[in-house]
Image 1 (cartoon, one colour):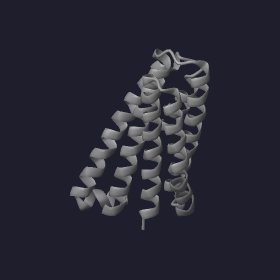
Image 2: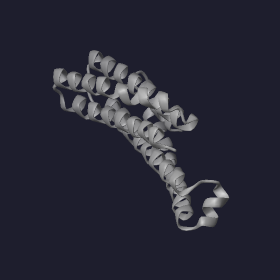
Image 3: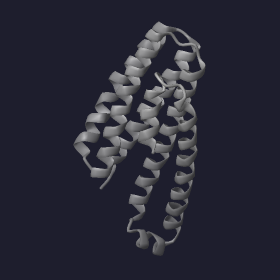
Image 4: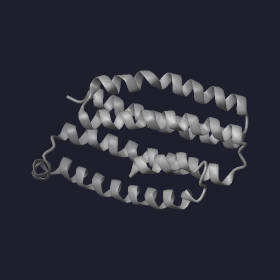
Length: 174
């Protein structure tokens, strides 16, 4: 679902009507994350639940971190779509934001795939790419010098940060 929200945030540049669907899915993601985190909390408190779901306490903590970052990414994508839908952003700026969002999305996708496949090499590659994307965001933000652009860029940086946290979680897993 988070992947779909990020894709729709990209598509919202050409179809502002997607914003309502993004909001609905973000609401669903928040509810599912809440339920998952409750199960994980119970598993941390009760060894029988942990045994039943087949996770060790440390694995639960890794999963907890990833779930929170996925939820955060969905929230940031929703905010980007809102700004793109409501603000008056020039086509040139919209093109640049969309291009950066596509890069951030690709990074996010790779981080999540690395987590689920426990691919530490791929996770390390995602971490190494953070600086370039953040610098691109900062450079674009300074050139645009517009409040709406700065807000969107901050959300882009937060999604990238979530991708890196997921990747670091993967690297740290035993």
